[in-house]
Length: 549
Image (cartoon, rainbow, N blue to C red; front, side):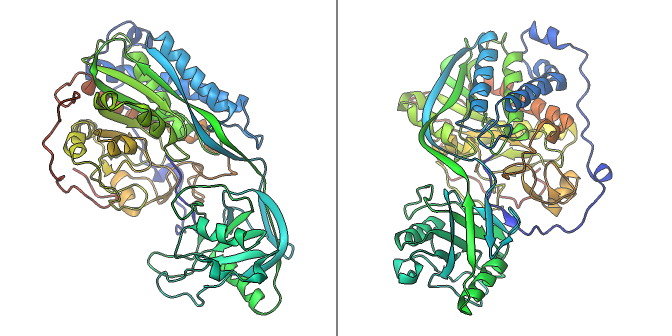
């Protein structure tokens, strides 16, 4: 999953015993059939396929992805499977080789993206005091090092109002001649972060500090928020001067020093590289059989972010790889197209490149998308993707999709609900935002999928529903530090960041809907037909953590 902007300090202030707090995932009835027996038969029904999706096979794929990351360090010297790096390319080559050996028709699609990576630990200090990375400050997507005195931009609102009101740095009028040769101190609010940075750079600033606005809210704007740099047209870019994001408290302290006539001397050092138009890859594998006019896409993103990326998302990648192997002898009614996308963590780049490469006829033949994004979270939720549901990130319904996707998307959704109900597990509905299913929904393709949560933070309602504890969904469960996934400079999303039992359970649930959808042409659309009458979706929104039954 693509990362959310981080917010510090975390609000969870207590620790529970991990062993007692987590609900134990019990696998479904242990299968008496061996993996070899599964490989030799046609697993063309849910009962056959589900029992053949087994923990040992799933974990073996995960270990391969871990080995690939270990053997291919990124520019920072740490194990990596990030897009644009050797570890990602090796992951794509591994998937392609496995799928070719299983008899699928495999192609590798190359597309371009802008590659950015850290080469070392960034640092931020004022008057010799080093601020704590990822707690007191975080680097914006930028390059370079500067040491200079701080100068405050115009438009800063202090004390802050209850709700957001600052527009500091949003126009060139906020930058006088005093900014040139200095590090610009800018308050959050009013416009894109990138607009503030571009204005500061045009005024001659050698670096930028953006501090949180300080509003008590809600929402609270006092902790650390590391934002994306977007220009006025919402285009992302890499700043050519170093950018530091800080908490409100640090920004206020720096501002007070400037206001008192003793501007601090600050050093911002962001060690990174930027390569525009780098190559990235999607691996596409079609089943030999099945109606080419009725295609079911089964996808997972193969790329990591900030490291090995085993939970996010070697798990989903391994799950669909194992399912595809177990279905190699199946003659599906609908053509199955397994896709491993790159660049998901950077902004759904791979799925966008794939969809944009299709002709209108080719796109019309894709009747459904099934997305596997993060399976096996230790402090899990069970999320079932539904375009009408609220997002994982903020509990809001953010996007309106073409009307035709809503009712059709409930077909697979309800298959997963029935599976978890029968197995005795709760679930919640979540929108596809942040997953590759989002791009398929935007293109008018119905979609569903599964995810088990990542990053911080699990809500009390979700603890009540799924067990476990408040705080991180995954890894380092007692630290409440935002977790391993999507956080730079921690390098802890490794194979021990996965719960094998949850991984097996959710992979079985996903296999159940894959084989059902492969055989169901009633919900598929050909180039001249529409699945359902176009009408507004029936409201199905539930707050995060509600029992979606």
